[in-house]
Image 1 (cartoon, each protein chain N blue to C red):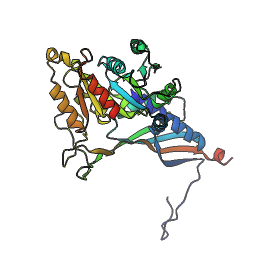
Image 2 (image 1 turned 120 degrees about the vertical axis):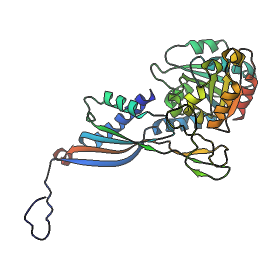
Image 3 (image 1 turned 90 degrees about the horizontal axis):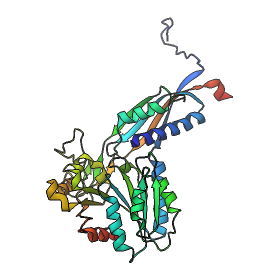
Image 4 (image 1 turned 30 degrees about the vertical axis):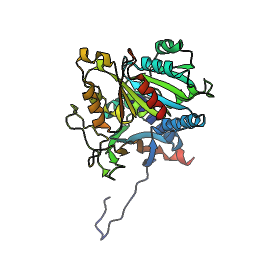
Length: 232
Length: 130
């Protein structure tokens, strides 16, 4: 604005074909997944099914734990398993001889399962007579945390072979979980890893989380996990 | 790399808006990301920049605002900032769900956002009027 000093300034506006617009919005980037997760949950609730999301690193024992749970529960209640994996069907193959409904979810290069994939998997099986669906997430301790699937509870599986700092290295994963399984307790002494200290770390983050030490190899603690899942 | 999923979602949403608003060029996208989420700003920016070539978003600045974590305690009624984990070996602050007042389990109340807050763009007025 320039011009002769004549007492007051006359504001001038230059017309310009291009104007800058600034639009305010509250567009949640996680809402699309969250909405599908709520839809999955509604379908599950309608059928009286509890879905559990198992998260944990590759090799922590998610597949073996789910296999042991299926062995114990399949004669009492209807159980199904969804196996998330980037490309292989190794985990689904390992559970196949349990003769329960299984869906392999290949995320190809995706680092986490999402509610859309789980929704598609729900359409692949007969939901009547099912009481429990164990969903094995991708072996990744970071990404799945932001993507709820519609499960009633989330279980984090860690094992003593992953060393003493698992909880401190991946705190966010535990904040959204209801149960933590500390697996491979039969190797704790050899590894020099304290189950008490891991448990204390988990409770520092979230005091009301249930921590269950297990050895899927010997079967120790697996009954307790089964009971905890049916109570959530 | 869930940042890639988030970046794709940003681009998808902003392109939709750009088309609706007849935007010629997007100058800036402002995000708000909560402290309780595990979304890494630099990685997100890198993913964003690598997928916007040849779109109206090319060259747009991605501004990231962090929203603080907040908790609520159902046991003692506390509401406010979380207790951070002292000596967690982490260089970043680690918010916990331990009530800072009574030590029992608190619930996350704030800091879970991951949203587009505002978009700044230019538009061709003549075409917009047409």
